[in-house]
Image: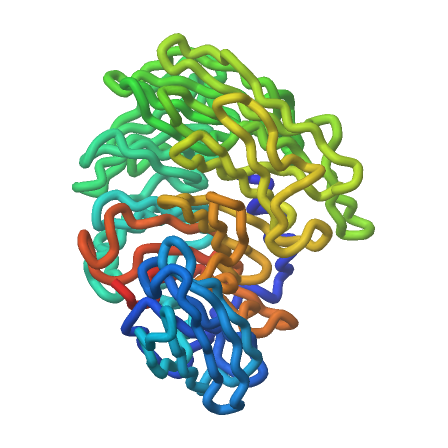
Length: 498
C-alpha cells in the first residue's frame, strides 16, 4: 500500500537507490540426505545446527554429533516422526561433522557431512526490474512483477534459469500500478494507485485492452485500447484486487494528499462480464488494502495509519485509526462481520497491517509495515490470538523493519524483512521461528551479510511458485523482488534435497 512504500523509502534515504553487488555464496556443499549441518552464511565463529529431518533416524535412537575439526561432541535423540532435534555448534562453515546413530546399541548410521549454507539457496540479481516495484504474482510458469514507478508489468518465464523476460505490459503514464489479479489465462485486472483507475490487460498479447475510469477522469488513457467510464467516485488509491464470483473486488486506501486517511476505506465491486460498477462496500476502518478469499468469504484488511514526526524522523501508530479485518459476503456484497484489532500503548510501532494469508484451518497471519513482527487471528471465530500487545516477534518491536507479504505453503510461513534484507520462516503448527533446517532467515540482500551496512537492497515482497518442487518444476520455488536495488531474486527452500 501507498503508506508502506513511502515509509520504506523515507527509512532508506537517498543512499540506497544504487545498484547492489551480489552477496553471499559459501562452501558449495550439496546435501545428499535428511541429516544436515546448516549455517546461514559462510564464515568463522558462526552458528551451525546439525539435525535430522522426518524419516532420518529411528524413534528413540541416540545421535552423537562430533565436530571433526574441534572434537566437540553433542547428543540428540530420535523423535516419533523419525527426526531428531538439532544440536548447536559454533564453528567454521568449512568444518565437517560425524553423525553416529545408534538404536539399541546397534549402529544404524555413521556418516560425515559438511555444512549446508542457506545463502547458497538464494540467488540475487537475476534480472533488473522497474522503478518502485509493488507486487510479484505467479501464475503457472510465469511471474508478473508490477512496477509502480515504471507504469508497467514485467513478465518472466520461470522455466528458464535464470528467468528470462517474456514481455512487458504497459499502462498509462502516471498510473502507478499496484497489484494484479487474473480473471483467466488471458485477462488480468490491474489497480492503478495514482491513476485512480483499473486496467484490464491481456497477458497473452501484452496489451492494455480497457481502462476503467471514473467520470471526469483527466489523465492519459493511452496505450489502452478502450475506456470504460463509471459514474461517481469509484476509486481512491486502489491498492489491491481479488476476483471471485464473476466480480472484481478492488480495495481503496482512500487517502488525502498528505497520505493520511480521508475516512474509512472501501471496496469497489466490478462486474467482470462488462466492467460496470456493481456496488461500493464501505469498510469498517481506514486504509483498506490486502484481501483474502477463505472458505467462500472475502477478508479485507483495514491497515490503520501512522503519524510521522519530521523533526525526529520517527513513526508512531495513529490511535484515531485502529486496524481491523472485515468479512465480506461475496454474494450479497456486504460486510457481515468485523475483527477489531486494538492498538497497544506499550507497542507504539505495532500497526499498519498489510498482507494477510491463512492456514488451511483458518488462522490468519498479517505482516506489519513498521516492524519485523506478525499478528495472528482466528478467521473462523474472530479471536485475536497475537495482537498488537503480544505480536509474533521476528526481529524487533521497536526498530524499523517490515514484514510484507505473508505467504503460506503447507505449514510454513514465509515473509520478507525489508530493512534487514532477509526472508524469515515460521512453522504455523507451533509458531516456531526458524524451524530446522531453516535455522535462520534466508539471507537475500546486503544487510543480511553485514547488518551494519549503510546500503541495503530492501527485500520487499515474495511469491511462492505453485506445485511441488522437483516434481512439478525444477529449481527455485520462491521468487522475491527488492524495492531499492530493484532486482528479481529466488530461493530454493528444498536446500537442494528434492
